[in-house]
Length: 104
Image (tube, rainbow, N blue to C red; front, side, top):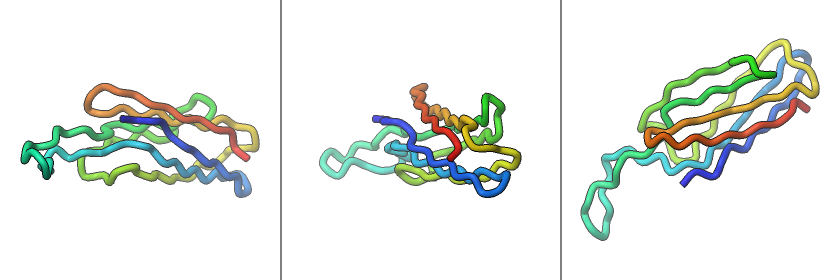
């Protein structure tokens, strides 16, 4: 169900602006299947960790209220061109998915 994370990291001075889109179904566990009437099981991202050159710069705890295919954006000071930005996410079913890019 998860395909990965698409990341863009743009340098503005010494601050890198990171935007990432995560492909994920993000089911709350509250909706019913229209055909069967059965509740669709919860399946959502519960943790997102972003690193800059291996150092954690963001550690977010999410829940079922985040929308399908969520987008996250943040800024990190002290970056330079060529630095590696990586994001790892884990959902409530234990699936993990990753994305990485270099600061441009």
